[in-house]
Length: 603
Image (cartoon, rainbow, N blue to C red; front, side, top):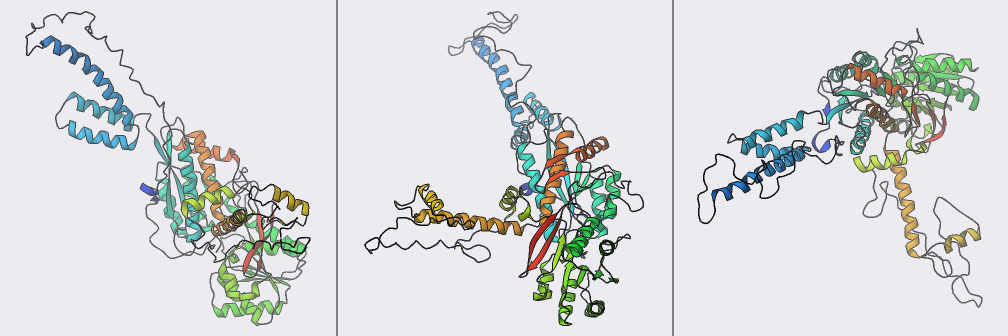
C-alpha cells in the first residue's frame, strides 16, 4: 500500500498524547557539552601556608583562652589544624557537588546525600541544596526540544508509519550523540494519525499545544495533511512531509503563486508530476494510443490523479474514451465485473488504474478471465504484494509508477540501511549460514588438479582465480594477477580454501544488504532526510536561546527553507513554495511477481 494516501483504518480514539521516547527507548547519546570540562570555584583562593595564621600572624587570635594541656596536646595545637582544614574541605566538597550535578547519575547521588544531611539543618545541607537547585535550573542546564512524528502507527499502513518513526528516531539519536545542537537535547514524540483526517486533526492539536516542539515529520497521507497543516502553521511549527503528493498543498489551483501553508515543506513530488511522467511513458515509450482510465480516488475536491493522467495522455495524442469512477478501496465483485465489461467494450491497448491494490488485483484477474489481453499501468497504490497475489501471473509485464525511489537505487543509502538495520533489526544470516529467504551461497568447489605433461595428476601451470560472483573475467592475465595478489594462494595460483570462504562471505554480505534494503520502506529514507533538515535548522537557531517561542519557530522555518545538503534521497533543498527542488518518479515492471525498477525520472 502506498504511504502517500493509505486507506484509513478504524482504530482507537486519535485524541491521545503522542508517545515519547523515554527511558531505554529514548535517544541514548551523551548530552551535548554545555561548558568547559574543568570547573573552578572563583571564590576560592590559595590555602594558607602550613603553620601560619590565616590572618597573617603566627600568634593565636586576640581574646583566645589560654591553652590547657590535655594528654600532651594543647587546645591551640588542635584548633589550628582544624581551622585550616575546614575551608579546604568546604572547597573540595563544593567542587565535588558541582561536578556531580552535571549529569543525571550525579544529581541522583546528590539528592540522596541531601535527604540525609537535611535531617539536621546545617550549613552543609543548605549548601548542597543550593548546588543541586542551580544545576537543574541554571542557564547552563541542557534544554529539551521535541521533533514530532505524525504517521499511521497501527492498521494497514503501520509498516510505513513505524518505519518513519524509527528513521526519525535514528536521526535524533545520531544528533544527540554528536552534540549537534549545543545546549539542547532532542527527543521524538510520535502520534498515530490512523491515516484518517480526524487522527491528523488530533495530532495537530497535540503538537501545537506542546511548547517544546520545533518541527514535525509527516504526515504521510495528503488527506491527513489537509486537515492538520492549518493548525500547525498557525503556531509557526515547521512541517516536512516525506510523501504528500496532493499538488494544492503548496500551490492552490486557483492561485498557484500563493503558498497556503508557509511552514510546510515536502520531499515528495506531486500527483501532477506523476501523471505527466506516466502519460508520456505510456504514449511516447510504450506507443499506446487508446487508454482506458479507472479512477478510484482519493478525491480532495480538486483534480484527481486519474483525471490528471487522462488530461496529459490526451495532450500527448492518445484517445481516452472515458474516466471510470469506482470505489478504489473496495473489492466488491459486482463493481469489478462491471468495470471489466466497460473496459472490454472500449478495446484499449492500455489500462491505467489509480485505485487501491485490492481492487486493481481483482480487476486484473477479471480482465484475464474475460480474455482481454492488455497491459496495465498503475499509480503507486498498486505497488503492493496484494496486487500481484490477487492478479496471479496476469500482472507480469505491468508498469507501476511511484514518487519514492527505492533504497536499491539510492547511491547514498548504504550507511543509512546499515545503521537502521543495526538499530531496529533487519534480516540476518542464521546460525546455519542461510539467508533469511532460505537461500545459501555455497563456495565453489576446489578446481580439479590438471594433468601434467606426463599425464599424471598435478598442479596446473595456469588456473582461473576465484572471483567475486558479481564480476567475471575471461582474461588469463587478470586471473593470474588476482592469484598473485592473494597471500593465501598456492604456488601455482590456486586460491586457498580460506580465500574462497572470504569470497563467499563477501557475496553473502552483498546478498544480505540487498535483503535489508528491500525490507525498509522507501519512505523511511525520506523521513530520515526530513528529520535531518529539522536538526540542521535547530543547530543553526537554538544555541543561545532559552525556549521555543514563536520567534524561534519562525527562525527555524527560514533555516529549513534556506537549507541545502546531500541527503540519503538526493539533494535536500526546497523552492519558494516548499516543494523539493529535485523530485523523482520511479517506474517499476512486474516480473515474476516482483516489482523491478525500470527507470528513475526527474522533471
